[in-house]
Length: 281
Image 1 (cartoon, rainbow, N blue to C red):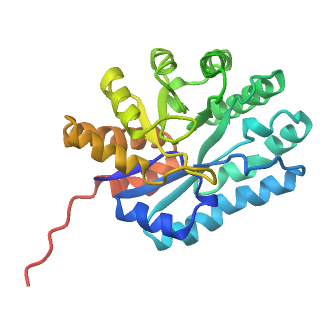
Image 2 (image 1 turned 180 degrees about the vertical axis):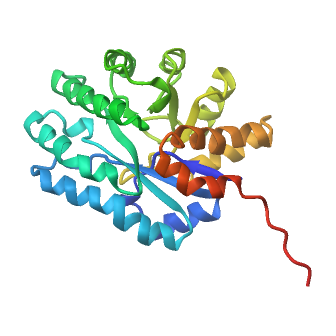
């Protein structure tokens, strides 16, 4: 099974995780910018982090395991309450968006659904709109429905193309709203705060597979970098065809991310490659 995981934080994972992901069919990943476990106090610490995920990670650990590593750059919502720092980071992140492996903006979104968070979200939506690049959006852990509806409203106010935006971390409560608004809908399989592969499989069955993206969002907390392969295996064992399953874990993320010319250039030869026959000996 060929797989693209469109949301995982390899900064906090081990090389053993990369090895297992490759063995389980994951050929490409996207690493969105995120909170590192404690709030940062200087813009420069963000820039060092952006440099790591856009240069060192793809060229070293990922490349050695045969995985194409891409990233998205952003001021994450959890640290956006410090609006002075957030605006400094947003201004300084712009050169990193031009990096070869940087395919869009993310993860942006809401955490506590505050005015400062909304302001930084809107400012980054405008940058994404003007650059016409993919966007990965974090929906809050608490008050998820309220936060998701507010994000959808802000995106509409900013006139963002919904087909460029993955509204992530959906649940059964929010998924229909995201899809009806025309956005891509991410389902994150994260054991404690989001959902399991079983729930993800059931949501695909209930809501259909169009514009659905499965991801692990694996990071430094309890999480599983193999959750997408596990969901794919579950789907195959419980009534989904191989084509249907590939549609969710390979075709859909490719279509969403190929809106970035840099992603398309790197992945199109891999995506279109025919199986090579092993020569007879």
